[in-house]
Every structure is written in structure tokens, then in C-alpha cells.
Length: 564
Image 1 (tube, rainbow, N blue to C red):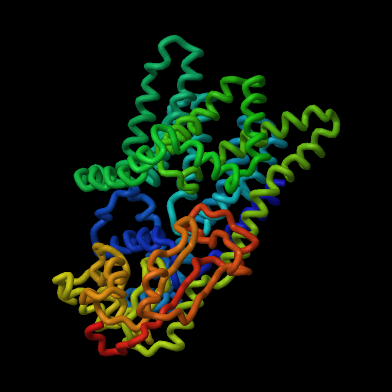
Image 2 (spheres, rainbow, N blue to C red):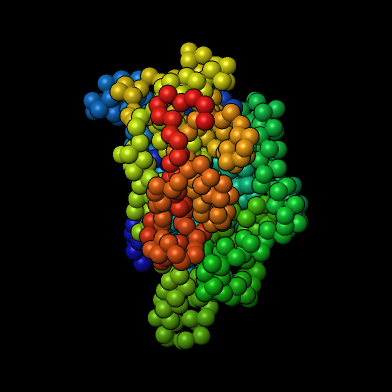
């Protein structure tokens, strides 16, 4: 049964792992990999602490091992050649990075099985493993080069290590549990809340002898956790000012914004809605509620230990912006509680309890399994942005002026435009960042390439030139600003954002020549499927990506650019 769960979970996580490539449409993936690759410059300081550093180091080590393997097998004669190959086609590197998430997701199934054995018998563990194997949000997020799924594995392992503190309590057990907490926190700051399992385990052990709360072993565990975190993410301390700045910036986006919109603990309901409609489904959640009751009747201390982390973590994410991915660490514990509840219900069936538990597990797993399979099917299809890219390059001459929105169609920027962007940023090509220098040195240079502009209010990217959306809107008026001449404007629209406002103003000076839609019937309203949004995959959607609109200017300006 465990092998079956692992095989099913592996299939769901490994199929379509190369989705989108060589183009990357999830902004978190590209930023995480860029930060990891920046370590190749010689400094171990990532200079960015929105996340702790350990995941960057793991990714950098994975890419380094891949480069050495390519050199040993002759696929890349030198590390410079490997880097050049990456800028031409990053597929292999992204597959390797995503594989880490997928493997972590599969190992989490086994860890959940072991965790369930601490709270129940083998039948509970089998049911929990199957629930974890098919859970939609963990399956979805295992397809991306991101920290959420690996951090979930580490949280589960740290919780397991704390169980031995409770049951055996040797100094070694405390050290191992402390190291587990430190490693989890070095992957993802909120994962540090798994210290609650360690604290409860120590408290349960302390009941057996007076004064045990002051046992030096809990101090050893705390020191082990702190030291491990420092070793695995040292520059959070060594570059403390930058770390505080980044953590505060992240808090403003994730926490402050949520409290302004939803109020204190107001994100709890949207998070529960994501769990109900996508992550677990109603049957699984009912089983988890029954599991709380069943464990409370059978062993309140076991429930206290098992529920300590998910309670504190749920309180935390109830005050953060409701992203489905943030709840990943809850799923192992929900799987155990759900399996315990299903087993308690099945136990009422007497000698048929085993058959009933199997049927109940199938019923609880059906909805998340169907969503996971639909996700795998969709991600195997070509993204609308990739289709639009092919159509544009087949019909638009190189050097033409094109405006695109961020995270939309990924066209090649001409070498001349890159240099112009550097000039605008007052940076010489020799002093540009490693990534931009590598892009300029590509041989052969990707073709066709365009005078590419990005629609937005600006950013910190030295290789991009931005056009304010208001400028595109005013071009239709009598006093159009001196914006660059554009031949083509590429717009996107997809829920949850709704229609693109520019679609109403661009027709004044351009006409639509192409629309790539993800829907079976474009006339039917619905949500386009974007894997980095919490949008339930629909059968009305046949491929991932937003609706892409390509607009051709009435008066094209060609490769020379100039005045509109």
C-alpha cells in the first residue's frame, strides 16, 4: 500500500515536470534560480533574504554538480561553455531544480506514513500516505523550483524527530530534534514554528519528573537549532541589516497587506476556502475534523503533540495573504488527522472495517486526485504564451518595436536594445551584471530579436526598458507622449485580474491580429489556468496560460524605430 502511494505520488509529481520549458512563466522560479546562480560569482552571501539561504545553496550545489557532470561527459568542454549553454537553453538546469521539489514531495509521502504510525496503526498510516500522495496543492507546487515542498518535508521530519524526545529523551534525541528545527527554519522562516512539536514533546516528558522543564537537554536542543540555522543560513546574521530590510519588505507584502484587506486573522476563511475547493476537498476535511475528535478520545497527549505545529502555523497564515502554497506544511498533519478520522468511522463497521476504510480513503482522495491529474494534463500542453511567441516570430520582422507585459510572451531582446537599456540605467556593458553580460555574449545570438519594451511603471532590471501603461492609453489622444515607436503590442488577460484595461484603449491605434485562448469555447466565461495563481483547473481550459492578444499598429515603424 505504501509502495502504491509512493508510485502514484511520484507519477503525479514527475509527469509534466518540464512544463513550459525552455520558457519559465513562474516569476518565483526565475528569481530563486538567479539568486542561486549569483553565488557562482564567489561570494556565499545571496544579498537577498526574502527566504533564508539554505535553499539557494542547495540549488547552487545541484547546478554545480550538473555542470561538473556535463564537463565529465563532454557535453560542455568548460564551465564557461556550460554557462553559455544555459543562456541558450536553460531546460536542463530547471529540470534538475524542479526535480529537487518533486523528490522532496515523494519523500514527504513516506514521512507522512511514519508520522501517522505515531498517531495510529498501520491502516491509518496507509490511508494518510495515499491522501498525501494525491493532495492537489502539494502536487502542483512540486512542479516548481521553489522552497515550499522541500520545507514541508523538513517540517515533517523535524516533527518526527521530536517524537523521540517525548518517548525516549536521550541527549542525542534532543540534538537531532534541534538540528531538524534549525534546518527547516533555514529553508523557510515560518518552518521554525515546528519548534512547537519539540516544546510539547519536552513538556510531555517533563511530566514524568519534577523540574524536568529545566533539564539542560532542552537547552542543548535550542543551541543545536540556533547553531544549525546559522551554519545553513549564515548571512542572515552576518548581513543582518540587509536581512532585516528584506524580511520587513516581505512582511509588508505578505502580512501587512493581508491585515489591511482582511483584518486580524481575516485570511483564515480564504485559506480554508482554498483547502476546501483545491487542496484537500470537503470529504478529507470532514475526515480531519472527525480525526481530531477520535484522537482526543484515544490519546489527548498524542493529539496535543501532533496538533501543536499545525495550530501555530494556521494562526500564522491566518494573518498572511491567502496564497495556497503557504499552507503546504499543513498537509502532512491534515493527512494524518484525515486518516485517523476515516479509520474511526470505518471502525464502526466491525469486521468490514478494512474494506470500509479503503472505500472512505478513495472517496476522500477522489477530488484532490482528480484535480492533480487535471493539472498534470494541462501542464503537458503548450502554454498560450509559447504559442503566441511562435506566431509573432513567424510573422514579425526582426528589430521591430514590441511592447509586452511582464510574465507574458517571452520574446528575444535585441543586442542593441540591451545596450540601450544599460545606457538608460547608466551602466556600461563591461560593468553590467553577470546575467546581462552572458546574454550579450551569446553566440549565435537568438533570432529573431526585437526592440523589446515592458509595460509597467519601471523596475530594477538593468536590461529592461519600461513604458508606463498610461502612456499607451494616451497614445490614442490628441497629445500623445513621446513614447517609443511600436509595431506590436502584446496584452494578456486572465482571472483573477479580469479584463485588461489596455484592451479598451489600444484599438484606437492598433488592430488585433491574433488571440491565443486557453478555453475550449472562448465565448464561455471562466478562469484561465495560471499555475502560479490559486485557480482551480477547469475542464473548460485546454492549456495553461492567459488569453494573449497581439495588436498590430496601424502605422508600423519597422526596425528603425523613431517617433510614433
